[in-house]
Image (cartoon, rainbow, N blue to C red):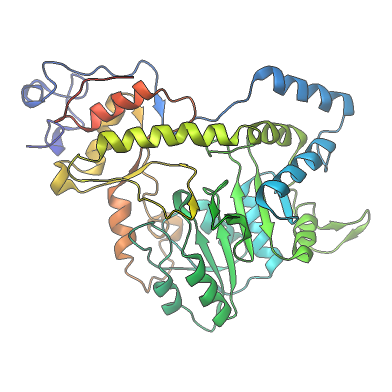
Length: 411
């Protein structure tokens, strides 16, 4: 019998809360059926600062009449970010995708770039925008980041860079990738879209590699409505990135390269500044949600919960990814995904499908079978976690996941 009280083929045809009468007879909750949430519980929601504080900041912008082009709010915000990440070489952008595209362009990357298929599609789009060839290699099974051994095996004379992703905010194998990049004279670029606020060994994760890109999209733990940031080791590269995000201008009349318009505006900077003031509060609230999920779900057969990070890593609890072993859990990941939707719980399958299986990238040659990445992509689901998600709602989400367990809720 299917763990969720239905057979897989019945999922799309059942009627009562997604179930037919026959399935209800076998449902362990038939006598005490959980009710769907009245409003959707999304996988994430943006933190919003107090409205009066944002309005006060808007008044400053109105008074200055400076909306974009390196205004006073953005300059102040950038200084605060430089202090936060411990680097003077911070560049701000209208979004993370353009930031990554400009990083690749400014670094002069050519030929092949070794990267992961287990990421958001913008990572690979940035390569294609620079006419670069992605070389997909497998991930390691614990933290879902690039497997260094696979990276080194994929290096060819055309390889110029490694583009690694700190998936879910879990740091890549920093030492191993740095060693590979050094020995083979490769650029090491980190897509740190998920990793704002993560520290490793007492240092911001932004301080590793040649350059790190952070996304400040509203779906992220930390945001500026839309936005992105590059943190770079070389101050000359910072100057190049700043030129490229402003159409390639250096000074008033000289255009030194083909750039674009990727500048962050004053309203984005204001939001980012206000959210930054509460980053510790945001992380603490997510930690409480994470701990409750773990305490409720760790005994459920077939669920693999987020890995424990080393003591040297500051975890920001950006996501709560779970993999589903269907044979042990009694249902597939997609069964659970559908069941959660029936209860108005909008979990997401981050990241499925793999980038190499998307229509626009299916022609990319593959040398690596991507065994781990394919297994994870078929089993992964990320559960709701965000500042403001009530713990009693987390209990109810766990009740839906663990239908064979105790469904008594508590706050």
